[in-house]
Length: 116
Length: 110
Image 1 (cartoon, each protein chain N blue to C red):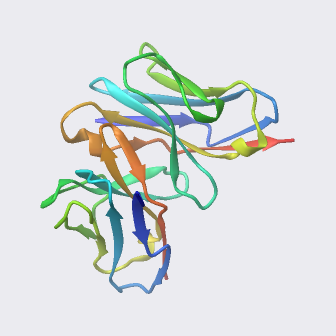
Image 2 (image 1 turned 180 degrees about the horizontal axis):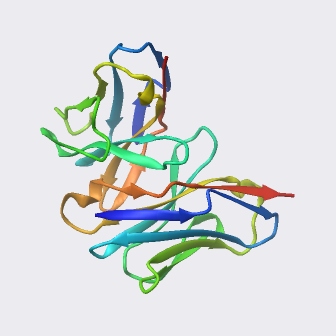
């Protein structure tokens, strides 16, 4: 079984401030981890993914995430927030191998608000 | 390459009605999935398929039916709609470990 917990359903930052969105996972086998972004009334767009190649993963739009096995965490960061980053962000986990590739378990989502 | 397409974009049903949400992909992906998105609950897996003729249940399968007769299409059927099925539905196909999502169908059941 696998699960994802996103700490904080709403995060508010000022433009230019650090963005930190928290994600903790539970998995009985080595996980694949993902961050997705959803803009209002749109589908999901992949920001970045962890596949065990490197613990620090860089994604699109200046986002990055660090896999910390000891903390079972995969927090998403961006050094300087932009107004266009306002969206809902989802952390997700998938187990490697077998038919698990077709099954993602998502966190509850974090809505990011960016103030001018 | 259209990717993953879903129809309709919006739908309103009355309780007890049935309907089919359509999903198609032109990337020749074997794996396809259906999720529903509800506020504060993220996305939850309804059904998935690992290839034509093979489907299985996800986390929240009750009230939904699927079939996979071709690689391209993976329709989701609501047998007798209930207000609890008001949600946004996303279809996805998988290549490797990466899932590609459709634009979603917003369903309201009154």
